[in-house]
Length: 163
Image (cartoon, rainbow, N blue to C red):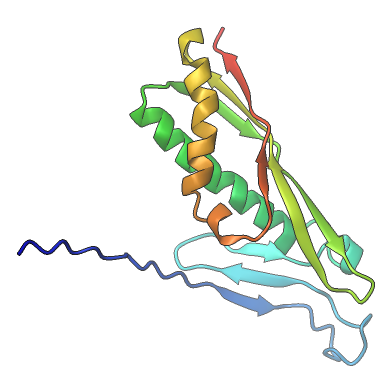
């Protein structure tokens, strides 16, 4: 009897998040502490984080909402470039201006309701345009981050031909 073994791979990730916003009195009052924190991952530059300015955060630091939409965009891009490569679609430039919509309820809870990717992709020649458009759907199917969220990820790609 031929038994086919299928195994799932498990990938583990670690990060350290340290709050750096204690101004001396801790969290004794909502207005007395900063939302600043540092995200540290071994062998990588530290990320200076805060909350969105709407939530008393520092506008010069990354916030979780920005990082969520950036993660979705970069994951999609990496899968997209992979699928283009294996399908002989030569991408010479890729830029995405990702947008996200988050709603905040009266009680302060909130959630993202959608994210839209707006990638502009430049391919080597016009024969590649249709397949280049089509591969965005496949990249979305494979994107680890898109598969982990409970809201729609929309795509509004523009495919240009290298001049």
